[in-house]
Length: 314
Image (cartoon, rainbow, N blue to C red; front, side, top):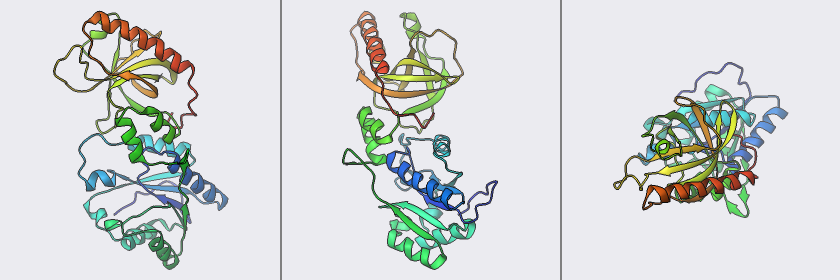
């Protein structure tokens, strides 16, 4: 196990350890306490995280899974005030470490003075390292352990797994509420089959990180960010059943409202605000065009009434 060196002293740092996929409201509470405590003591706030996600490695998950890429995670944590994010490669050797070996190696390299964790945090082989184990190791090695109480929204628990499940069901409202900000994806605009242009509704196709979890097939109202400027858009995620009888690769098609610039090859970001409807097969192109016009109207209304919290992922 190794931790990369960073460009400032980590002496007496406060740290937290976790996957932090999505950096939802529960994660944000831990980070808030970490940053506040570190600042009060005049020391760095450090996040130790993992890639691949331990669950992906242990369960050998090959499907799309991640709510945030490592780069997105770094960006969000930086905006929350973290001084540095140290990403460890989670492989077989790390998964077999005992809690003592993991913490001992980490403490020997970082010399941290306080460890903040969630109330149900566990680490080490077979998740043996619970809070009591960490407190015992802290007494032995000379660091404090602070457990952050569970954070709930509307009396409901918050977790990355619940958010993933909500997105797979198209329940964007639950996902965004638990995240505390609109779910987003980033990618590159690529050429598609130009079918949208031929029917008078031009669309841009988006290529995204293959491991990023997409909301379920359907039509969404979203904001698109191009060169730091925000535009309203209708997004279709799915298999275009009106044109293809047999499902092909899932696509992300974006129709940007009141926009006609050339954006092929550009990096853009989509921020999902609400789900408008399920993906549907239409009997004709004419029926599809009528529905898309309604989608545009519905998207304009949804986006004009948007009261989403500030997007910390921007």
